[in-house]
Length: 385
Image 1 (cartoon, rainbow, N blue to C red):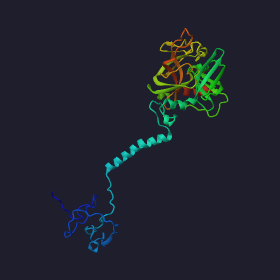
Image 2: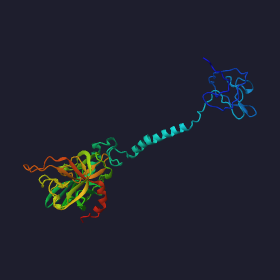
Image 3: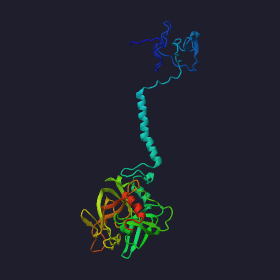
């Protein structure tokens, strides 16, 4: 093996690149191809050895020898680095800078963003239409989490009229006790009673109705403090296949929770605007017990009558039954994306006089954006006033 010798000071010291102008080792100096180990003591301070030059004291004479046999003074304007001193890493080029920037960007785009989401509670769940999250962190994306967060905002609505009584559901939209429901739930009612999720009941009055959209706004009398107001989402963000949860009072079973997916969007559902059609809805034995509607030229759950209106609906396979009308269709972040309004049910059993088994997975909800756009008019009495 051939070993290449070099004079001390001719090449850069250590791994670092020093000045190319370092003075060469005198020819008389011994050749040492290996650099000595750093001293165990602190290096001495440099001392001037001549005009414009600096040397490090050591074993050499007149300060010209370096500790451990280094050569003499450096080129004017440059000083040799003493053995054993800490060496600085040379500055990297553009490639290192680009890599550093990429790492920082990744940290901001990943970990930092995650941290912000955790602090603000704005992270979303797959199959959700909006970014606002009202579900507890540990239960995000679960039916149990949605039920826990939203159930206190859903009520049961009982309407009484000369024609009988009906049961539906409603959604609390203000801390003062305003509740959105379907028009057909309260149509022609002479008295309204609302039962909250905690079982307490209050009387209510109709504030405004819009039969063309099958919407109504009612308000609790002597509303208690601390009502849980629902978070209204963005139905424009709903997509076919999204997971959804329905909460209402089917057959008077307050706070019933069912789940499914969004089956279709923009279904043209036609419902009756006749008050008489609304009576008895949700009660077995009250007519056929179903709210009549038509779709695709076919009528379901009875005759819709001569006065009808059509709206675009969200179709869902979440189980809906009589009494779910006016209740909530909810995304997995706990946002209300629709007001359940119609469902298909098989014909009544003529032998028993009672309705058939119930939901067959064809339910329809009024998009919540339609509700939000109509709220101001409903508060002013509605289009039917």
